[in-house]
Image (cartoon, rainbow, N blue to C red; front, side, top):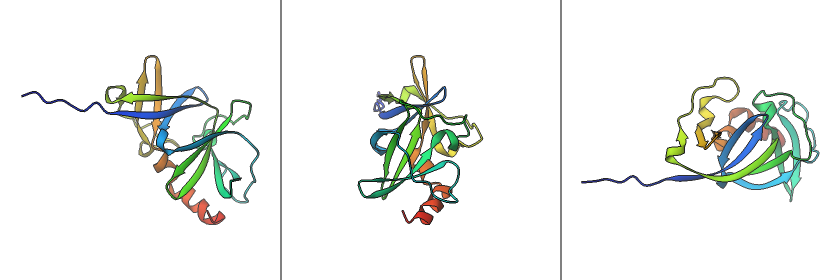
Length: 158
């Protein structure tokens, strides 16, 4: 008797931070916007750039280069904010650029190594391989639900 495995694929939005390419579940993405100035919040962690009013919703903006301890961020014409809808929570994340939306099959996803540092294995779902590209797959819901962000939301009333 032959058993077949269901071919599972996952649709991810690919984005760049420095030289690395990351991927997040497309279902968490509400919209992609150009970077615009934010309202700073006193005593916010460095990686929280501030907040924006998005159609009546106050949205905290997280700079992912700062969050992941990468080089100092620069903001130019390719810098974008990916607005995430995480259930009852809306968060924006600043990235260098967005590449594309792609499908990854089970065969293209490898287990994530423990890289240590700011991006712990708790937030990684694997590494996606596409020809010569490797996407670092991030569990964006878990990352944006971390205690440091939840505590910040309490302070701004989000």
